Length: 370
Image 1 (cartoon, rainbow, N blue to C red):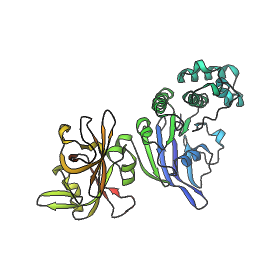
Image 2: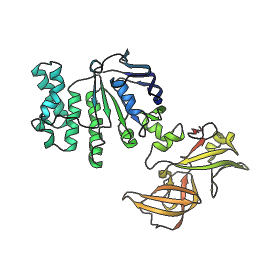
Image 3: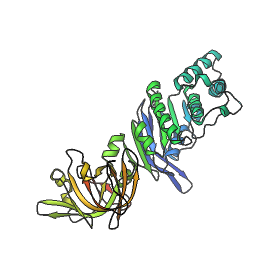
């Protein structure tokens, strides 16, 4: 078991900066997920930890030891890749045992470790099969089992579920979460799928363009994003954003969004008084836009007139794509809602859960106002 630290880590490929001053402390036995869009630097960060990429500047620590110049095989880590990378001519047992045989581990111990790992993963009946006789999910479990038998200090996962179908991804991510609890080992996991990150992680590191945007628990990332990028990336469907400004009218404060305005609740007025008459970006999640007929109890609703552009029936909920002037946004409403394309309707914004971002300092990625 081991902690992991990235200390002012930079990685450059020629003139391309893949990682910029990355600072992360990963605690022993933590499940940390690196998440972000393609090209954000998350896999590069993992490969620097594994020793597959050389750090340009900064230091990488495993268990308080600098490993910049330590060979990958001596870092006591095990990595599970997106591709299963199984030897097709070997049985499941031999694929899982191969690394141990190279390290001259005694035969009896190899057998014990392989059987134990296979039992944990539920593949003990498959040990004599070849990879071609396995499903995609079973092959992924073999790849994970090959890592488990190493008994490393740190497990590294590089988008291990990308090749699985949607149903199997849900099942396998639950299995990996249970595996983390069973093994009580540090997991560092890379994915572009924010749902995977939210459901599995102890903490999530959100990266974009090589920069760490926010490092926090899944719930805090959802409730309190630090900037516009995190707010838009975490949550599915993503948060709705509107350009507008704050307007004071008597003792009331309004968020003016062009064709409509919404009133700021008294409890939150003081937070935004310094932004009166200034340009802001208003954010609200689809799940906080409701059909007024089916409002949750104890919320502060503000009704808005909109036009229905598209409806998507999901069974347990309905996604409404709505229009208001130039604004297009999504509501996630009660399945009892009966509307059709082209209808003029009202929706209710839950003003207990909204976000304001200040574009003054950084138009590309405005910071949240707290």
